[in-house]
Image (cartoon, rainbow, N blue to C red; front, side, top):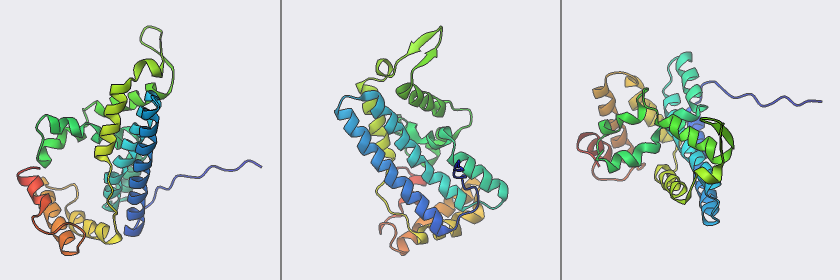
Length: 225
């Protein structure tokens, strides 16, 4: 008897389920980095690069799941799940260290990561393919992973994956506060969104879910890191 494959879930998730999904992605991203590092130490650079890119994609699921928590309509839900299962939507953050190196400090400085016209997600996805598979490219040239992915590139991708990864545990309360503050202004005026982020972080501090003291979100938005 042939077993039917598991169908991908495409519905609404509550705060508990969103938090669980985020924590699963965080933990798996860390595991993939550890595996990539072991392969790097063994000089298996193409495979190390491949796993580093998978880790980047796992970390990218976090922001997508946060958007799913704010979904208002069936279309919003469908869009969020489409992004969740799209490699190029999950890897948009991989240029973040480069932007920081170029002087990006405030929230608005990171807009290029999410521009629809940007090709950097497709570049990383292509790197992932050539790190793992042979292919016939250009004018009938056979691409070999070990000839394309060298030590320096594998090291760079592992460093990016580590920067994008997190050790933070996300609780149900954090997601509930996220929905409370960001939900009413989601996809509306940017100024409203920025203020909502500040308000969310402040209540996170009040709840003991973010460090006390200066509102780091407000600082990031207004003056930069």
